[in-house]
Amino acid sequence: MKFKLGLFVAICMVLLAPAALHAEKGAAGLVKERMDLMETQKDAMKVIGAMAKGEAPFDSAKAGAAATEIKSTAAEIVDLLPEGTVGPPSEAKPEIWTQWDKFTADAEALETAATALETALADESPEWKAKFKGVIDSCKACHKTFRAEKKK
Image 1: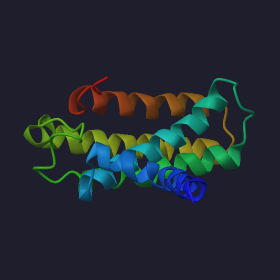
Image 2: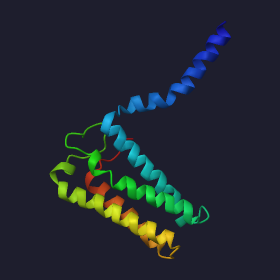
Image 3: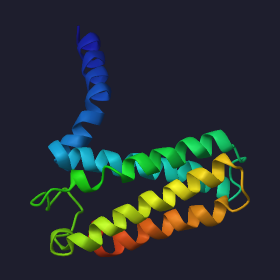
Image 4: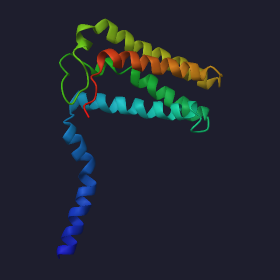
């Protein structure tokens, strides 16, 4: 019986590990939605970044889908940051709400840059790497001002 109980406990631990990670972060509601959105963007950036670095073969369909993902999630950023959603586990800095116009302009700049990248990829333009750099620069500009450094 001990073997079966041990196996049951092991299976439960494996199945519940992802939930435990989220619980450990303490993310819930809009903060969790926002963190998930940023993870989605990060994953899309990795797809295109690997192609830009030559680590993965260029695939305009995959890159285009990733650019579309960045564009659509960029359009959601402002709505997921209502005033007061700051503090752990959120990495959002209070400057978002004291510099709201700059924050919304940064979010719009990301959406614009992602749209330009999406277009360049659809046209298979050689300019797509420069457009991708524009997306990277938009992310960096916003993070520099409005995202707290992750604690190690």
